[in-house]
Amino acid sequence: MTAVYEIDTWPWLEGLSRRYGRTVTLGDVPGEVWDDITSTNAVWLMGVWERSPAGLAIAQANEGLQREFRNALPDLSEEDVVGSPYCIRRYEVDHHLGGQEGLRKAREELKKRGQKLILDYVPNHVAPDHPAITEYPDWFINGTPDDLANNPTDWFKAGDRIIAHGRDPYFPPWPDVAQLNAFSPGLRKATVETLKNIAEQCDGVRVDMAMLMFNDIFARTWGEHAGPKPAQEFWPGVIQSLPADFLLIAEAYWDTEWTLQQQGFHLCYDKRLYDRLAHEDANAVRAHLRADRAYQDRLIRFTENHDEPRAAAALGPRNRAAAVAIATLPGATLWHDGQFEGRRVKLPVFLGRYPDEPVDEELRAFYRKLAETRINTGDWHLLDTHDVLAWTWQNGDDRHLVVINFAGSTARTRVRAPWFSDGQDRRLTDLLDGRVFDRDGAELAAEGLYVELPPWGFHVLAS
Image (cartoon, rainbow, N blue to C red):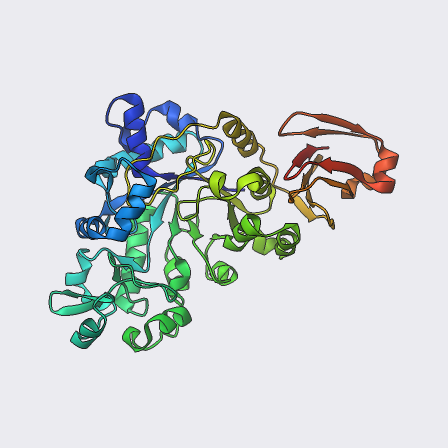
């Protein structure tokens, strides 16, 4: 199954430049750095596209954002604010990062190591200085002078047009972006052409807020400003025009995952599992995992990404247990650069430099061992347990049992793997810490495996 490693490209390259004492761009990342992330089979270089000078100026003038920036980076300088990677002026690789040639070389390095390259696509909005605003204004949500006068934070003037700022239906508009119109035939055609161009440069895209383009959601968000609802949904027509092997990952919320899968996305965010791992108990997690296997195979699980708090800070004692869960469940896994090292500061995407943080060497060793322990192929079976989370994998003669005490107290219980019924003596080896357990087959068949785990403890056992 797919394991994706997300890299926040600008601050990552800045960190490498400091580490090596020279300017490092995508085209000259040292081979040892690429070698260091080969425990995954896809790398998502988040934020390679050209950032907007207009969007940067808005960010620099926004007092709320400036406070957020200083909270993350107390020694903030003006040069550290580089603009949002989701305020895209053009889908061309930012020259600061190495340009198109730099990206090409980075892709070659990843390909040598058997890894796919994933980039971003933002369907809902572009920068306020994107060339299309003046060249193709009908691709955007247009308003009236009255709209601008009555809601000046929701609209802006572009030439002789009034254009909406981008938004989702539950939050105020984003002041640094212009809202595209999902109902515009011209925009739908342009989306196909843009994605075809991107597909020549990488192996897949992570699509930002993909569900915002659903006809019903878009109509509810924009009403009469969007115009008549098309007969066809946005994504099916776009996706069928793309190469069949081009990986499409949807950022998805509001229980839209299944619909996005039906419309052609290969993988969708499992945000609900994240919320349950971060805030709820084993029963809530287990209930979530009772979904159909075909559906689960097309979810991408995570405990951290650039939108969520750092797992080391947010998940506390449950951090490792949650990581074991996402790494050993059906579906894909998403890891985030800095997660293995135990970074605790969530960096605003506008910033081009990480704060200095100590590396948690013990945590890094754990994550690397876990990332290398790829067992989520074959037949998966969720076990009927009450005190712990438990599931098994069987792929030919390879058999694995995962047991997680997802609670803050010691768990003592019995776990029955399907193959224990044969009565054979078993040697069970924990793949994460190397411990070996020899167990009597008759006891396993009659009573199951006795497990005693400390709070938030776990086993990943090979049988």
